[in-house]
Length: 262
Image 1 (tube, helix red, strand yellow):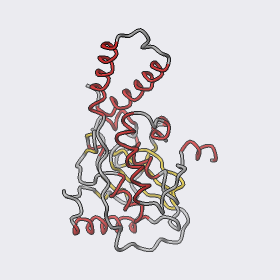
Image 2 (spheres, rainbow, N blue to C red; image 1 turned 90 degrees about the vertical axis):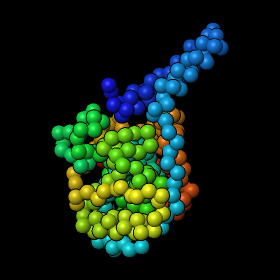
Image 3 (cartoon, rainbow, N blue to C red; image 1 turned 135 degrees about the vertical axis):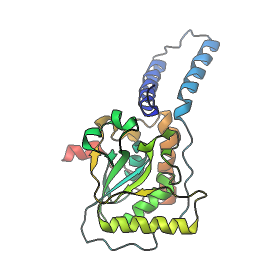
Image 4 (tube, helix red, strand yellow; image 1 turned 180 degrees about the vertical axis):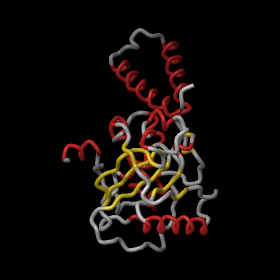
């Protein structure tokens, strides 16, 4: 049996084809009953992949945050479910110059979608965020991560996606980031703002990140009408805009645009 991850990509591709088919009036002459049956079958087929996005949670940002080292460029690597949605969120954050989908936590040889989707590697679907700490701090990125980007109380899953590759994990790029992340999790645990315990892990410092395949990059922007994106990821972006207006950037920073300038 194929994994739910592979089903998700294949179903999204199928929906694109179906949309083109419908635009070409392919259903002309189809009886109302047959059309209704076809659409119902499609709805049932996509049901396992569709779940309303987790509700955003109003929480305080980190009470203590170490001062940055004065550089204008820093990276963060975060995992919290399907990387399509995490990437989409951070592409709209001021001060972020790149948000790239990929894999972290495992070996280089396993850093591809088919192997990671099996759930038998140590990788998590992750996003590498390049940002200017003078505009947005690492603590603010974590504030967004815990409040709107994902649900930190779900163990080895996120929304409709299940498996260790969808775990909640922070991969700090230096000791300062590791301390901020651990202190913030302790702070949130102490306030009991979440109804269930936080299961987010803090991984080893400077864990390697491997970029995902090109077709995964900018996925939510390229496919805004796909049901998976509409139900699971678009609400996260909307919550970012509503809850963090000072950090909101209307135009997303896209991997495809960054590649043109490099």
